[in-house]
Length: 97
Image 1 (cartoon, helix red, strand yellow):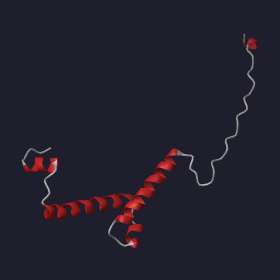
Image 2 (cartoon, rainbow, N blue to C red):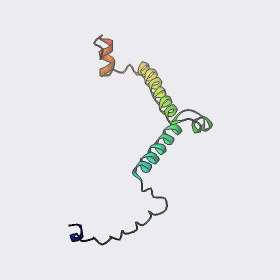
Image 3 (cartoon, rainbow, N blue to C red):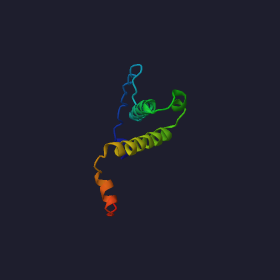
Image 4 (cartoon, rainbow, N blue to C red):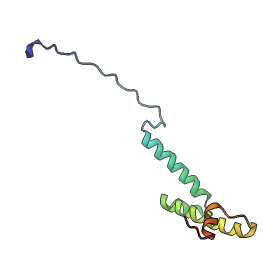
């Protein structure tokens, strides 16, 4: 019974060409590189010296950015007397979320 089976010939696998210099082949690495570049750009927009922003980790960059935007929104809302957004008006009326 076993002698009746034919043996398959080994298939030669083609060798993949390496990607060109500077190109990332791994999608995870490309995603991480894009994320890091956007975080660096966001850190450069913060109103802090370069020495401070260069030493921040990712979470600190996001936390400082959100805090800065909240403070800016708070102080600009008082000057413009802008109408309240949907969430703010619901809280003001006591409806909650």
